[in-house]
Structure formats: C-alpha cells, structure tokens
Image (cartoon, rainbow, N blue to C red; front, side, top):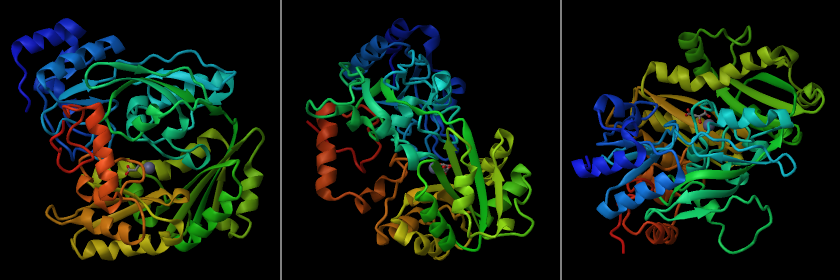
Length: 459
Ligand code: MLT
Ligand code: ZN
C-alpha cells in the first residue's frame, strides 16, 4: 500500500476538509472492493474533492510526491479498473453531483462526473428529452465512470455508446492542469478531439470532472415483447428482423433457460411461459404513438403462445426483470468470472454454443450463464463455480479471438483482462496507446495498473 505521511494527510485535509479524507479501513473498504467482491484492494486514503479546483490542487500535490491515484465514480465497474488493487489513493468523484439546466434547443446538458445515469435520464424528461445510455446499474453508475469505460448498455442499438453522446469534457491532467471544452458545438473540427480520447481511457489519461452530453427524445409510448425461442440461431434471426424496425426498436436482449433457473431460485421469479424454453429474446420499442403494432408485425411468424407483450409500465418492468435480474441472481450464487465479449453476428451462434465445451476443458465444475445485448453481438458470459486455478478467462477469450471478436464489448480492460489485450490490439496499437499515456501522464500516476500489462518505464 502506498504510504501517506502525516504532513501529506494534513495537506489533503486542508485542501478538501477533514471529513473528506477517509483513512479508517472501515470507512475506506467500500471504496477498495469492487461491486462483485472479486477485486479487493486497500488504500491509505480516500479523498473526496467537491470542485474542479480542488481536484487540480489535489493532483498537483500527489504529482509532487509521486503518489498514484485511482479515480472512482459509482464503483460499479466489473473488471477491477476502479479500485486500489496496488494501494493507490482513491479519488472519489461522488461529490460531483451537479446537473446544469437542460439546453432544450440544442438537446444537450452539462453534468458533473458524479451524476448518476438515472438522474441524467430523469432530469430532462420535462423537456421531452432523456439520456441515451441506460444500464442496469443506472442508480449508482456515474457520468465519469460511464465515460471512462465508454459504457454501452441496453439501448446502444438505437443511440450508440457513451462516446456517441459525448460532446466535450472538463478534465484534470495528472499534473493538475485543467482542460475544458463544454461549449457543446456539434461541428468543431479543430484538431484532435481530446474528449473522445477520454472515452474508454479507464482513468489513465485524466480525471473527468464534467461533461457536455447529447440528449435524445423521450418517447412516452413503449411496448416490450418477450419471446420464447427454440435456439440461439432463432434469436439471431429474429434480432435481424427487429433491427429493420429501428426506429422505434431500441433494445434487443437475449437470455437463456440457464439464467431463468437462477432468477426463479434466487429472485423468486416465475417461469415466464407455461412450457420451458431454451432461449428468450426481449425487445423494446418506443415511439410518440403506441409502437406495439411494430413489435407485433415483426413477430408475425412466431407462435402467439410464445410471445408476452407488455405496454403498461408495471408489465414492462416485470418483463425487463427477467433480463435485468441476471446480474443480481448470479451474484447471489457466488462471485462469477464476468466475461463481457462480442463477436460478429455471423459467428454469434457458433460462438455462444461453443462456450460450455471450451469451459469444461479447463474446469469441469464451471457453469456458464450466457445473456446480453444480442443485437450488438455482445454476450455476457458469467461463469460460476469455476475452479480457482482454472484459466476460464483465457479459454473464453481465445475462443472470442478465433471468431474475430472483442474480449471487452463494454466493460473495459481494467486489470482483469490486461493479459489478453494482445488478442485485440497489435503491438503497434499498444505502442501508440502507451505513447499517448506517457505524454499525458509521464510519471504514470493515473490508474497506473490498468489496460497495459506492465507499466512501462516512461519519460
Ligand atoms: C448487463 O448488461 O447486465 C451487465 O453489463 C452484465 C453483467 O453484469 O455481467
Ligand atoms: Zn451489459
């Protein structure tokens, strides 16, 4: 653990206030362990600044002493990228909760880094607008974290990823200097788009304090269809049919009977249909007028007994619970290996079906639970009961590479996936990425142990 001298702690307290520097292990534990409980770190101090000026002064102090820091938002990350696994100081942005007034003409908003995605979706509703990124951890996940991991989520199909919503940032570099680009110009080709570089940078290039974000129309009429299907191939084919209905289709999700069993056992959900089915697809359409007919038309070839359609908010939530409850039900069983991957849709069926065998070759006890954002080719392979020493991650990632996919569709590399970065990035790409890191953070103090395997000596 990075040692913090008493004089240093005194300086930090003078800067952000006594109660915003936590050192008691009881108090820092919640910031040191990730949501799943798989990644357990420790820290000498959690510092909670409340203004950009405080972040700048704080980073200047840490820079002068060569102290590494992990920026943290809602601590909902799943790849060990936001906790102090090497004893770093934690810089919590949780206090950055300000949302500025909606610019309804431009359809934009400026939000501080600690604003949750739920707040961001809610606040603009009175202007007929909302935020395009939606993830199950919306009540805790923050703007800063969503940018740092370039979140995708449930509605990416229609609105794109976090980078697509990002029009500018205010951020503090490792040496305490501030870059600020919050004017919201959508057309602005004046050299490098530094804010876009921060999307997916996992806290390694700068500490994001505010962002200018694009809003999307809020559609009041919604319909959700849950469809029981015989196999994954039928789900891919149906996702193709539904994709042709965009807009208004904005989500197409997949889960399997293996997940429904967990939902029954641990969350008490009933079987969705009278007869069991191996595969389920959930789709949501949203429009200015009732979009149910769009879904009904797209599902015309499906046996009506295999379709549940919901339009009221309560019924829609009930159907979504089958998809969104997966993470919770899985974590009730134990700590899973969370392997968030994507493959080209042409390879999706073969890949998804090959997983059980690939896993059984490395761990006889491993149980995969497969679900995800099928329209994006994004499968969440959560693996339970794997033998501790088994290279479950390697087995799945090698398979992903064989099918031309990505070892991280939306969760980032963090510490969990860095040994396999070479499966997706060439030596030249990694060298270029390291050069960017070294030029913005020459002392390698900002989240120094994520993305790249060994922190290279720089300078
Ligand atoms: C989800 O889409 O529910 C999460 O990204 C996946 C997970 O918890 O593994
Ligand atoms: Zn997901």
